[in-house]
Picture 1 (cartoon, rainbow, N blue to C red):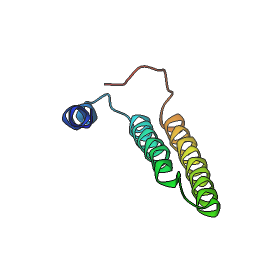
Picture 2 (picture 1 turned 30 degrees about the horizontal axis):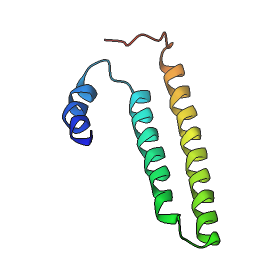
Picture 3 (picture 1 turned 45 degrees about the vertical axis):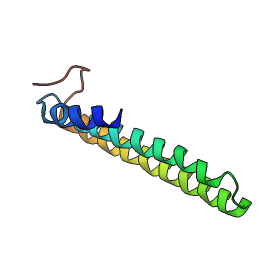
Length: 87
């Protein structure tokens, strides 16, 4: 799966219709998946370690959501989003 993504991702990002919010969604999804996979290492950990991991993940998600709003605001100010890619 990773190899397939690495093969097609450069072509997708080079396309003229690729926009900033696509990059944001790609990073947000990757970060979320990594954070969820990181819980595997905390199965047998102490409770304080697990609580810190949960708190750090919540902070990261909140900051990523705030970044998403900034990106959406910047897109809204530069042009009206119609749902169709601009070529």
